[in-house]
Amino acid sequence: MIFDNLVSRARTNIAKRRQYNRLVAEIKNLSSRDLADLRADRSEMLYQVHKQIYG
Picture 1 (cartoon, rainbow, N blue to C red):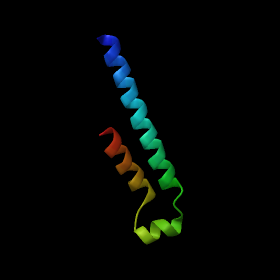
Picture 2 (cartoon, rainbow, N blue to C red):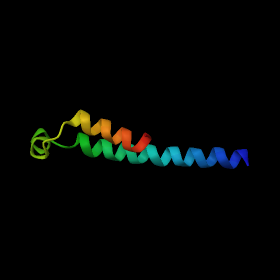
Picture 3 (tube, helix red, strand yellow):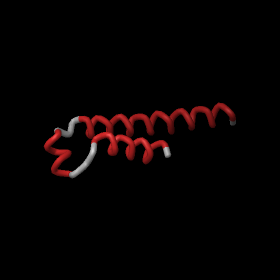
Picture 4 (spheres, rainbow, N blue to C red):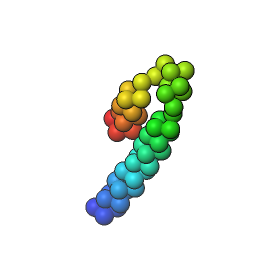
């Protein structure tokens, strides 16, 4: 039971980290022009992604 919980939490954390890394890579690949077109701030986007994934 304890081992199952540990494995389950590890899998959940790995999935969250993969999703976070994928979104961060997408944001970092945006050019300054892309950000201007979106009227977005890179640091705010990164903050929101972290907040969305990890709470």
